[in-house]
Length: 363
Image 1 (tube, rainbow, N blue to C red):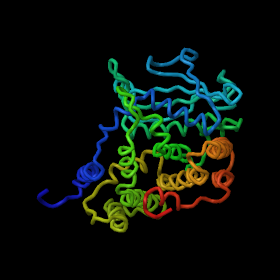
Image 2 (cartoon, rainbow, N blue to C red):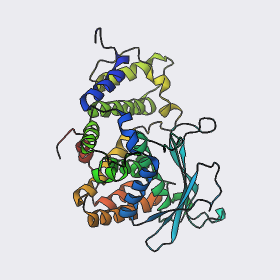
Image 3 (cartoon, one colour):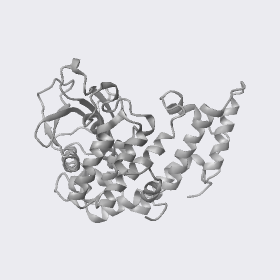
């Protein structure tokens, strides 16, 4: 490539370098991630580690679109303890982009007519076409696992007071713990190959493709971590320390100063990213953006408990899974998040697991 590498070129060439370094593209993976297989693998995982059963219940609740599916979650005795709606496909004409989970009915909400909590799970995957099922990108698979983690905390709550049951009342620092925890299973070989089957041939995701996918997980991980730290530090500086003087240039000077301290490549003083940083100005994250990285610390440390027990040892993962269900998922906002975490882990969180998963230190 001729010419200087400008800051606005980095994203493009980072992706081209990733493709060359790991020799695969997102499109190479899609044929292996048909939505029905992904759901089957996801449900098998949570059924094993949390001692539940996901049961299709289409027709038992009114839905807002023909694409929407309805499921019950049964306990080990076969009793329904929760339900959820899944709206999986993109509909640009009446549905915003992205993916989210939300509460439909809270546990203890006796006025709803439901005896157990109900969740909404909404995604925007490509709809099926003819005989071709909905094929997902790997990122969409991660997102589905992520949102289902939120859903599990809502549905498996053991708290009866609606204000702190499920996802309600969970402090900002810990609200992403269950969701990011579930993403880790997408890099567990047995779990991923259990759901990744070619939609035409039935071939399981090849070992070499899995190894490339796993290796790519830590690609530019240090830069990504610095980027998140820069955003968090800028957020705290502006919402906690900064005293406006009437000079609008000041906030851009602050952002530039922090960028210089957290960037490998010299930033531009003309950068106006703050003008589109809606998370901290209109998205509810003011003075709370740090919680993204802190939740990664919590989720990585929680997943390391399963790694220590042996991810391929069913008895051990089921035992740890039950403890995770009774604490992280079950207690929700009824206790301080640090107390909930220490009840699960037996100690306060450590950053080590996150650094190991990012490939920045050895285990």
